[in-house]
Length: 296
Image (cartoon, rainbow, N blue to C red):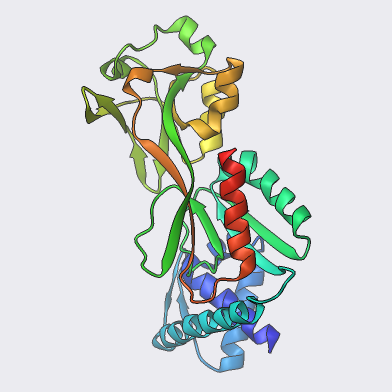
């Protein structure tokens, strides 16, 4: 029975990922292995679940019906497990946690190790990437992320607040005069963040009590926050970064804050988790631990 449930969980992750290759990437597996698991599930059920395409697949009618039923079934199983373990004195079980890559590596990962030392019966699976996660669709216990979700089936809590910082390295500033106001950024090469198919080339600022946006440009763009960080340290341009990502570099002088009087809006790191009547103790412990540790 456990193998059948595992196969159904993998099937829901395939649907959430949208393709077998993306599923393999998320599960740290291979495309042939994912294809074999899907084929084995279809053979066991005697139905075709998806129409395979070169990049994405689409659910058949039978696959769509199965997916809807399985999502409800797995939710009920997780709820039953949470209810059964709510009174356990020693917290135990598995936590599947997603976090952004850069803060995940620098700050979350060390805290996860500390958390499991404190609660050795809890196993934490930490997934680090900058993709936007669906807590329920990706079968996450907790998603740490910057954007406030709109899904009414999840609960979100702020665990860290910071501000965005415009910054550059001393090497860059030796060759380029520091901007004195946001409009001066058009004279500089800025390092741009890419989200999906969109390049974030409008940066927010506060000026005369009002929020404004300044269009920036540059020859370097990436969807990876750590790469942006490295380019900024190497003097390749001006970057807009969360303070929590670069605080050590600012203190050490490896990066210099620019346009501080125009500091833009606050950035928040949320912890989102499925809305359930019975929240597993391990989930609450993890979120409380992260909120306390990150605030100190």
